[in-house]
Image 1 (cartoon, rainbow, N blue to C red):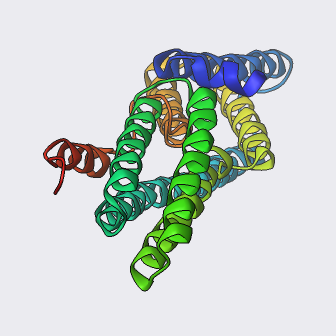
Image 2: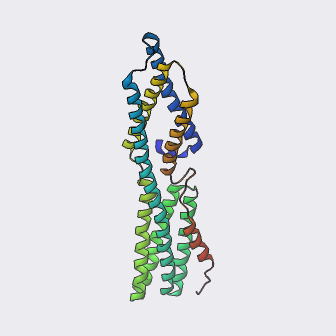
Image 3: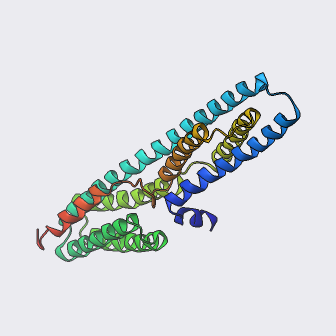
Length: 262
């Protein structure tokens, strides 16, 4: 439930939330540094500067690592779309190897199947799309297996194989889109290092006695943009960065151009 709520939030709201949280932690560090400055001398402790640099470097490293994971998962999803379009297209062509009545049933089911996939990718109800996809799998298998049993031949076996590939591809795409996400432990580590880095940065600024917002805010916004980008890549169903469905769109357009009896 919490995951669904998080995914429903607009990416701009997530960016603002991340930026405000980073600013909050920085302010906490600033207040701590300012109070320490009021009690002690004006010199910033030597180890503090090194600690801030080290934490910012560590934060940059973890961000780069997390971005690499999100980016590679995004590429996998793009490849899965193209592969599924090819698998469905192959099944659609091989439907010509069945008898005429089975051919029309299979082709109509495949058209509906592509429509369901496109609707889900464009923001439709993903759970409903999964249920409808499984129903079509069953209907496809019933139609193809019935035709293969009635007219067993190497040609119908090709259609059986194409149907198996389509069903297997469904699980592969669902895994890539819904289950292959950045692990929660990495998000926790990223959040902890971000908080520590911002507190340390704020403490260093507090020792100077001035907030220096002109220098701090651009740095906070830059890190917030990077974190938001990673979050966006990790949400394939929403956000600004989406996997192109052009291969499936082209496939569906090709199906519309297919005439009965072809």
